Length: 476
Image (cartoon, rainbow, N blue to C red):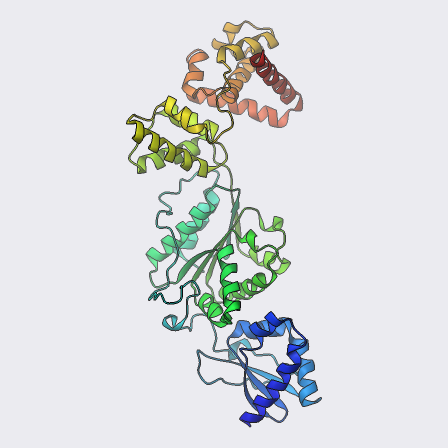
């Protein structure tokens, strides 16, 4: 019977080969092994459950028509799944030409793998690696991730996941936000914490681009089985920049089935993206719906205090201290991207070392030129005060005096706001120019004006007109 089932399957392959693209044939049909032929029922062995589900999802009609052509109307097809090379156990159901395999009958369930026998798709041929390497950066920890209003939800969710991976409602944990806000740092911090607390768990960090390249190489080498087996064995999968799966249909299909396998078996999945799941383009709806199963936590641009705390912490870890004026100046000019703060820090450290000098405001001004278009525009605080006083028809000196009358408070707030926006002076310096006010008072003025700009179109137009006047005065 063995010879007969081999001949029958070869006849089936001859038909299938004409019906599917060469790459699909090589990937999904060549690895199949015929097991037996009995009473017009052909049993075939597939490498794993993902393989079986893929065939059912994408090629069931082709298989059904092929079996009918080769074995007649009574022809049936059964699947069995190889258990790490062991003798397969055929499925005994009788419900169709291409019969379904009950999940409980599959020996290929995540968690039953012998990791020592699984091939890591990242290993370069000829290089031995005895243990799966998580690919995590040891510097990315919760201790080095500064918490603020901009990231509190995501950080706390990450801590919960790290304490109980796969055991919370945050599965998957989908972290999203603009470039440079700390998505990779937070995702890897979770991984590092899990590795530390649960050394027996298999944790892997991989970018979506690297994942795609691994699939391409696996297909080229006809080694998809090893690729799938490796990923099914993971306890925690961290995939960075999931948006780069856009338009990659084959990669999305494989990831879809891996996602299902890991999630159903209680494994933790952590994903990052530059946008929310609903805004992802070129990603299949069935994947997006799964991204929403857990928690979607966004990261916002950090406020001034958080930026200063981040920069100060980074400098301290490097063994360097900077004055409050320097921190304020840098963080007022770098508003949206934490990564730029790291770049400025590296520049400051290099210049301070080469010039053998302390990091002062003058050095900070030079360092920041490579990161912002024009941090210093040559506009003076005195010029701003004069123009604002003239615009509101109030004496210039009243901007520096105490007083709570609205006709004086509003001009003072606006003048302070414009000094912060249009000059490179620190909060301390601005406060000194406005009667010796402290930095918290200056911050309050700036925030008050910004809130009014956001809510009052007339007020916004007024401020924009004043800002234009200040810039025009500079050009003259």
